[in-house]
Length: 383
Image 1: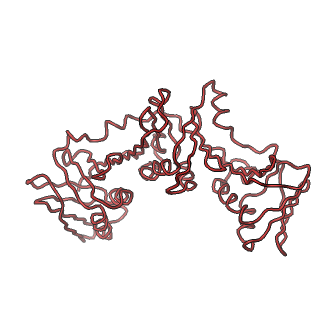
Image 2: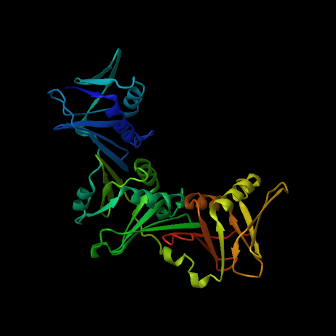
Image 3: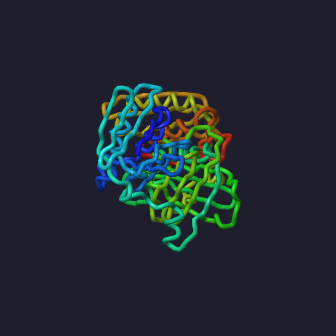
């Protein structure tokens, strides 16, 4: 089989699929991506058996040939295409065991494998059918899905023995969709309105593995108003966006009751309102004297003034002072991990931020003053 395609159409698809190709695969075939022709579409698939990306190039008209699917080394193919001249055409000539790639005066010969034995993951609908359950479909805006990940993913654990902490939980009900992540020291919750109200969504939860969250976040476009489809089953989920399908397995566990961790406003007698950017900049300056072993910073509040103090093992000290709104005439002190605070404020961005303190030894609540859909709970540190 032979076909010709422009670099401008082929390279974005290769880059998308190549992102999930493992460097240390469970089996050699996983270093390859599958290319197959269906009608007037060229379909590309890459997987590591935990995550799979499929994308297609439409209005594709190959020359008639016998080979309908084949696999090529993913990274080699992507690097070849990446380094070709812009606005060039790429011609593929697929033989029995080798593929010749030509562009301009360049020529490459790669060994390919048959596509028949490529270990592609089953679709979410097929997995649901195998387990005698039904899959569930929702329609959302692409930007909403991206925001659910962006506002919470940094709070996931990395290699915790509690597997459910190494992922991001999505919870669905008839009115809202919640994204939740925690590493046991901090917790993030972001909620959006559910535009697919249905009784079948009550208390539905999925936990997406950390790697899948990072890969999906890479693929989604910020600010996109495009509609995407989310398909859920007990074992996997798929996201259909544009000409692409992202499929991932799920963490088989039950997420803890995160609502009990979030301080309630009625439990917090003390609160502080401060400009997010000013506080963030002060924390970044003070963090110069922190180190990997000691990341604690002391908050001292009194007379609508906040004093930030950080010390290190060399007996050095940084102090930052600023005006805030504080609702008590009595001085108050509490310690936090400075890195956690900076990451939270990076996500919150501009505007005023509200801190609610039950006491100096209890979990505090941080939220944008004008956005109650976004909440962060953070444990204090002994300073």
